[in-house]
Image (cartoon, rainbow, N blue to C red; front, side, top):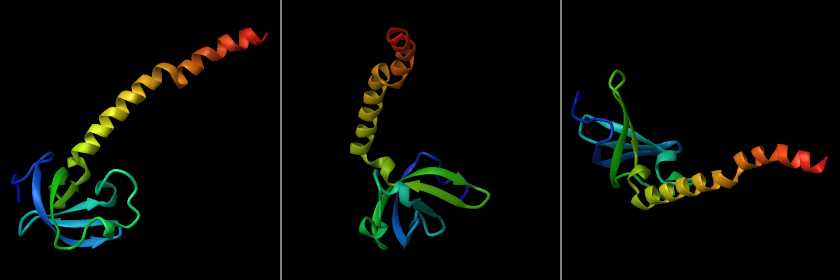
Length: 117
């Protein structure tokens, strides 16, 4: 197990079990990890069984490895290119909104108070 995989690696796996909180993915015969329900796809997942089932072959990204407890935190959504582009666009939009959003409102408040007097 040691050093076979590293955080950030993209690997193929097979779903070995599905629970309401996530899916267990076999990376090798000896190594299994968990894709938490929040890492299945972007957005809200009400029923994980609508997105993944036992026996599915999936590509996952290793988010974190706890060597001491032999636990692998995995993600499917991290590999969704459309979602990554969407997150980048959202970030750019949010940065632009910051120019005219709450920070500006806070700065303008004093000005508006003076104008109202």
